Image 1: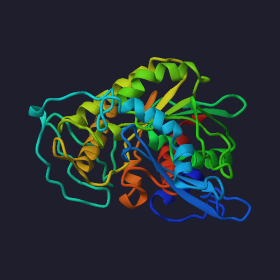
Image 2: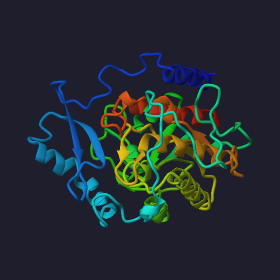
Image 3: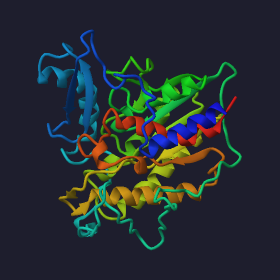
Length: 363
């Protein structure tokens, strides 16, 4: 009954109905004076704003913009330098396509999430439910997520800078709700968030790597897995970096979704009782990529549609694999730079994960 009530609260929250679940000031990291300072640090090897991080720091944590970038961006810069080793606009793991593969700008009807055009190759069918949300056609199925006898839930969050998040990102919301439901939550990962919102969540472990494409995660996922405790569930969201900057053609949406499913299969092959919830990516502010003249907002929506279709036909769907839909709970106004969710918007992201996660938990 308590879990049902939590699900109702989450669904109301996702519908935009405020419930007052968060205590006053929980969204900010503050010092004794109660003041907070909002900082954005964006770095890459070429010095351009390619992958952003918005953090809220206590007053006095940095005396200048340069100091903030040095602190908040030091890990990001290292990751970005690797990804941009082949040039400021292309990561080392990006596919190279010829100019002949380029396509013209797609016509798109713009909405609050950037684009409504989901057209793809004729063999791709978009999966939208009656409410316009991406749907893999999944039922609860026979699968579930087992929790340890002591109530500990081991959660591995994997992805790019959106998974890293602002002040620990969507993990704050997961921490609040799951602990209120009586679970002991342990976040796993090889990274530690440098600016967690400790007033909400004291566990800052994750594997959200800024600048990483799906292929970049695939290349390192085994090493990350070897370095952590065995997870009960993996929350996997990636693909933004594959589509936002350096796509080669319209088929990149489908090929990136297929690459995502290869990553899913790699993680499933690790074995054990581990389950995976894979998510659609957030909307992106409309921007025509100079080469090859494709609107990234359209590509993002196409990627999500293809991902939902591929999850829907996967043999482990409803057994070890489920789909969450982060895209449908966010608006462009939730993104502080047109790509990354704000601190407050990460609570919506957390609710999208919880909508799928909570019904699967067993003890």
